[in-house]
Length: 414
Image 1: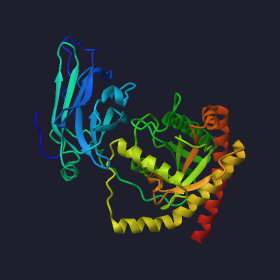
Image 2: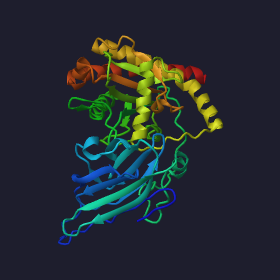
Image 3: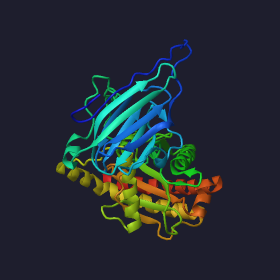
Image 4: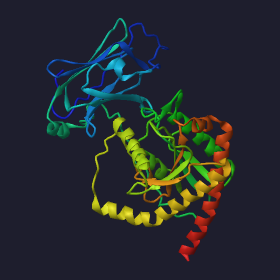
């Protein structure tokens, strides 16, 4: 099938196995079979992508820019312990990333070394074996043409797989708490799904932070003073902007993002609390913020900036009140965690341009509980007793901050 225009979007029909009985429905995930799958290049510069699946599934294909990448969404495919070198046999594909993108949908992202256009896409199924093979041919094109043709065409012909729910009536914006109600806290376990975050030994940042977030949520709720929800409660990808949206939809008064990074070099150790800043407090903070942005990019999220000067000014005005509250929250967390666990990073308060902290109306902080590349931090993160101490320190910090914040709100109202 030859394609022209912006991008190919094809939905393969789910294969019905000939001897299917009423109980035999396609409940299991399809799997990618490495034997029979490959990414290779021709002498002409074309790239051939062959993906063999254990069964046919609906799918779509699109390209995105900055970095240039091919995105393939499936409903739903297990990739196993896929490594780039096991699939890719050409330098024209620099990197691959895969995993659960949203419930019911998997995503495979191939980062391109040069601009390539989708020229052909097809899926062939085997009635006898029940398998399916997706074939994609990419051809070189100019950078200008690639940028002009990125994205996905309308999916109305095949049904909108990313269909939004019906709009609902929203309540008025929540006012700043003044001690008259429970504080609503959005806990944001970093990474997830196609973006596992830092990985060290057998541990994965996304899993560690989800576990810690669940423990923290339980402690805060049991205190009786807080309502708490998680931006994600499973191993699923959620964009940085999507995390802010979840927090706002839940009526959050506070947003706390939870992370545990890893360093390729260096001996940094201990907990660090970050707040938003246009200028990073040091090179390490800048690099960490950049790596978080890149996680969104490599997961196939289009981060093309929409420059709206009026909106930007209004957001800056909102942050005049919110930013000092975030700074005070960060200071309280530093003191609370340090008192509880006994030792944190020597320079525990940093700032950088984290997109996940950019909600103009919600005090937001990012807690880096340590570095998985550091043996002591890794041991602490894996230790329920240490996590319990850290959580106790967070609870004490929130108690202190919320009382002071409510008192300030009452003074401002008078």
